[in-house]
Amino acid sequence: MVDAMGMRILIVEDDASLASAIARILRADGYEVDVKVSGDEALEAAGRRRSDLVLLDIGLPGMDGYEVLRRLRSAQDRTSVLMVTARDAVLERVHGLDLGADDYLAKPFAMAELSARVRALIRRAHAQASPRVIHGPLTFDKEARRAYLCGQPLELTAREWAVLQALLAKVEKMVSKESIIQAVAGWDDDLSPNAIEVYISRLRAKLDPAGIRIRTVRGFGYMLEAFKAYA
Ligand code: CA
Image 1 (spheres, rainbow, N blue to C red):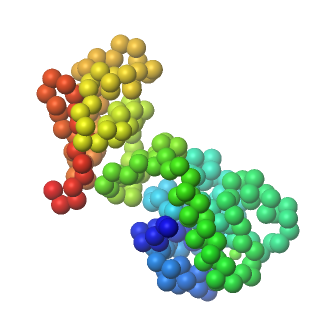
Image 2 (image 1 turned 120 degrees about the vertical axis):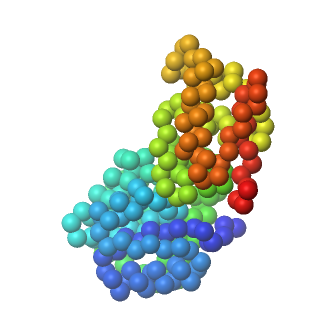
Image 3 (image 1 turned 135 degrees about the horizontal axis):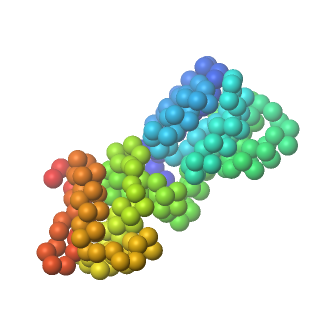
């Protein structure tokens, strides 16, 4: 059972009364909800903050829902998308599914059906072996190769990514410098232990403000400490 608490849904709908009716239902179901009225606003919001599901109206003024979906997927954003279409034509639905939508709902729909579809999609997304590692305020999505800190995208170079991934695989366990070098290898053949220190210090600069600590294990390597919210 997936709890709705803490789950975020981005609603993209230009019809204000429909959007507020949908938002009311989903909030009553326990989700946190954001409403955007255009494709531009939706993409901006999606880039700033991760959602668990996007409820995407196809008929939007300006950039339509298909274009929003296409841009999300080409940016490697794999958030579940439930498209909402007034167009009942099979080809329209197929087009959306081809672009990477996870399911569709044709207008008009019953709120109970919307609620059930959303629940099913979120359950499905969580049932699939999640490539996402969550460590306190850090979300590390291996499949999408994206990391988020406190809900904000965290910029990491390829090497910082590899070092952090090696540490996250062994939280509260010592990770040798040698095994970190092996994890990073492929970008550079003669990577020195000193180089690893540089990546560690860059990672610390990014993660420390959020309370995530990488401890130095003298003469051996490093350890990502268990996250303590009130430490
Ligand atoms: Ca519309």
